[in-house]
Structure formats: structure tokens, C-alpha cells
Amino acid sequence: MPRDDRRDRDDDGRPPPARLPAAHRGDPDPLAADGRPATRHTAAGGVRYSCVLGLEISVCAGAFHEGMMPSPDEVVTRFCELWSKPDLDEIASCFTEDAVYRNIPPTPSVEGREAIREFIAEFLATLDGIDFIVHRQISDHGVVMHERTDVLRRKDGVEISVPIMGVFEIANGKIATWRDYFDTAIISAFSS
Image (cartoon, rainbow, N blue to C red; front, side, top):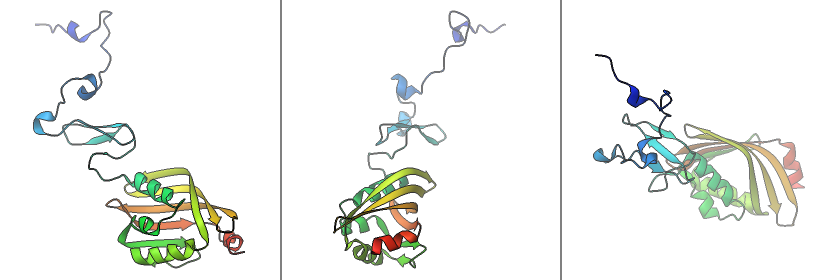
């Protein structure tokens, strides 16, 4: 018996347009029966879709805002914002207990949250703050890389702009490794 597929066609004989996932059509949540919703809204206003296999696809970058850990991008973005009006304790809280910081090439690695806090305190002693102007930022598997310009605002009113390439490794919502790469000739401008 031939199959009647007219129900799968529009009036003009073409297949109907693809439909949005059930959660965005107003249909009942297809995974609600097992307690796993098909969608979750992100902090950036986007939505994540979950399929039956448990895979998730992010439609808009951002972390879940309901009890979920911030994304690596969000961790680094927040960290960069803190430097404009620096609070040492708040900045230090962004690091894991065993974090490593490296200003490449001029200084050796600084290891541990408390040692990084002390290093930052010395660095900030002559500054009112630093504006991190991020030009491009990418993230993949917990590694965040960005190109930025740091505008160091010295207490004497002088501002120094430093182009920097930053690399961050994020673990459990904290910075585990931070490396900054820049032209060492700029150091002489800062110390004069």
C-alpha cells in the first residue's frame, strides 16, 4: 500500500520548514519526565539545548546563572574588571590555592595564592589601578587567551599603556595559571 505523505508537505507540495526545539515552540519540555530540562538560560540571555544523549550545545556564550560555575571566559573577564579599582583580597580570591603566575620574560614564576597576592601588592603600591582593555578573547577547554592593552594609572597621574598577550588556565572557576607576554622595553618607561 503506498504511503500517503501529504501530511508531511505544505499546501504547495514542499516539506514544511524545520521547527525549533520543543522548548522554544511552547511545547512541553521533552526531557522533563526524567527531571532533566531540555533548556537552561545562560547569564548572557542565551539558551543551552540538551538532547536525549546528554550533549549540550551553547547557543550563546555564557554560563548558567542558576547555581552553575562561571565559564572560563567569565572568570577572566571578571578578573580583568577588578583591576580598575583594585582590592587585593578580591583579586587574590580569583586564584586557586596552588596557582602560578608568570610575567614573561622579566620575572620568575610566582607560586601559590598568597605569594601572588604579595607580588600584586608590591606591583600596585605605585598605582591607582589598571584598566585592562581586552581587544580579543578566545577560550577552549579551560584555557582563555586574550590580546589586551593595560593602562597603568600611576599615583603621580602618569598613564602608561602596555600591549599584552595573556594566557589563563581555569580550574573549578578559579585561575590556576596566568601568563602575560609583553615587550620588555616598556618596563623602562614604567620605572622612569
